[in-house]
Length: 202
Image (cartoon, rainbow, N blue to C red; front, side, top):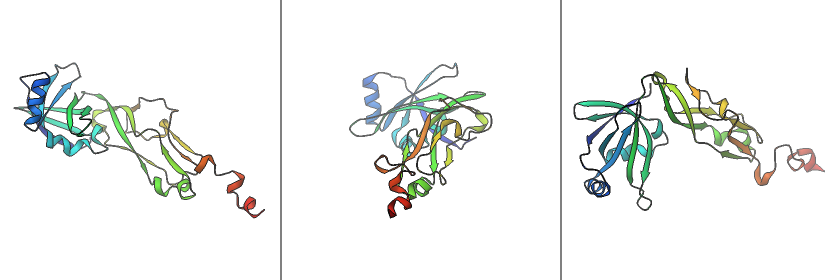
C-alpha cells in the first residue's frame, strides 16, 4: 500500500456559500468525504496543509488518513476545485477507502521520454493521457504507473493495455486507447525518403 499522509480536519457545523467564505478567511477550506455506502462528512481542512500536496502529480493517488476528533478515516482524493483567478483551493472532495477493491485515478510517468530513441532522432513525445483509471486491491494501491520509453522510435505508440498494473488491478479504460506516441517533426516519419541517408546523397 502507498504511504499514508495524516491530515487533520474538523467537522463543519455550518454549510452554504457564506459559511464557506468565512472558512476561507480563516485559512480553512471546505471539503466533503463520501462513498463506500457511508454517510458523507462535511469537513474543514487547513488550506496550507492541502496545498502541500495538491500541486503534486501524484495527488490523486495519495492515500490520506483524516483525523477528525477521535476518529480516523482513510480516504483518497476525488476532485479539487481551484479559484480561477488566485489558483487557491476552493473545495476538495475525498472518497472513503473501500474494504477490498478501490477505484482510483493514477498518474502515468513516462520515464526517459527526453532520452527516448525517437526524441533523440528529432521526434516529439506526444502525451495523450497523464492518468489511468484502475480498480485495485487496497493493499496494492500504487502512487504512480511508470512506463519506460527509452527504446521507442518515431512512429510508435503506447496503448493503455501496455501499462504494468499492480497485482490484482484492473484497467478501467479502453485497452486499445493510445495514451502516448512519438511523432516526427512537421508530420514526417522516420522512414520517409527525406530522412534516409541514401536519399540525402542523391
